[in-house]
Amino acid sequence: MSTDPLVKTGRALSAAETTRYARHVLLPDVGRDGQERLGAARVLVVGAGGLGSPALLYLAAAGVGTIGVVDADVVDLTNLHRQVIHSDADIGRPKTESAEAAVHRVNPHVTVERHDVALDSSNALEIIGGYDLVVDGTDNFPTRYLVNDACVMLGKPHVWGSILRFDGQVSVWWAGHGPCYRCVFPEPPPPGSVPSCAEGGVLGVLCAAIGSVQSTEAIKLLLGIGEPLTGRLLIHDALRQSWDTLTVRADPDCPVCGADPTVTELIDYVEFCGVPGAAAGDEGDLPTVTVHEMAEELAAAEPPLLVDVRGAEERAIASIPGAVAIHLDAFRSGEAFDELPTDRRVLIHCKVGGRSAEATRLALRAGLTDVANVEGGILAYLREIDPSQPEY
Image 1 (cartoon, rainbow, N blue to C red):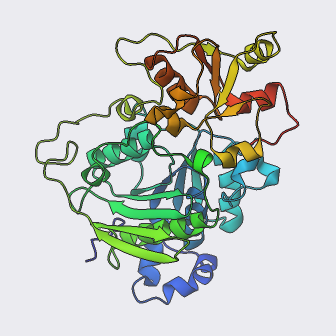
Image 2: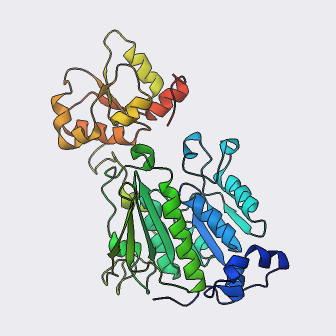
Image 3: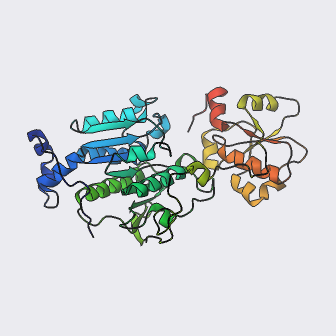
């Protein structure tokens, strides 16, 4: 069931714009009036990464007049297999700057508003408040809950997408018209239980499939045409090449959009979602070493045992010589403690330090006393000690 258009009035198209968008104008559900309303629309894309790339390009090509882009990151070589809005020439460049240039190459009539910041509780309401809707292309749970709560408080819809490995999900969260994100996912998963794309990988072309659906939903909402994905969760399996639809409903007891909300202002979403390896209330600071301190210890007469908690696919890209592979899951199950010595110092590392922090904390709780987390993980090792191996 269609909704009223988010953009009620448009702006006149120039002759060049009329020609550019002629195939849209020919569509009965769009027409000149709809294209003019797209020209007056304001859409915020959170994240200029894998999902943001196709969304930004297609929204620009469609003639959305003002596109905001929020991202505090810079372009990295590992982004380029999926973040098609960037190129080799953009490596090291702010993603918002690269995205702005790409959007203008696609459509010089579009205005781009850059927000070179990390979206957080201090700025989300102000930034999101200036747009008609949000396209959420983020890859972390704190920002997903933040975007949802801010949109609920502002009464705005947001088009959400999520990808990992070969699977993707899309929906439209819009309190008052259907469920919000918290209605369906009331609690974040345990910290570290769901790998990020940087840890678990992602099929690059999957971003195009999910990001294009997000763009379509955004345009439908702006124009009030078709049936938006409110109340439906679209699930894509790229390996099966299947699309499944689940019906989802608003939760009357939802803490943010329910009848008696308990979340009435933006909170600390990092604390809400938790941090892998975070200390319990009665635990002290986590013992840590730098990669240089690790190297010195490994070169000593009685070196510590170095444990790598990453998966086999990650270790195949880069590894620290002499490290013993014990997956993080073995620490969570307790099996790792049958393999770890109690009379020898143990150092634990992962990619950047998050998973190894969790493993270190679990080892301490299991009774090991001489164990430490390697700060920065193998990426710090590659950058500061052994740059001959590839980063990822």
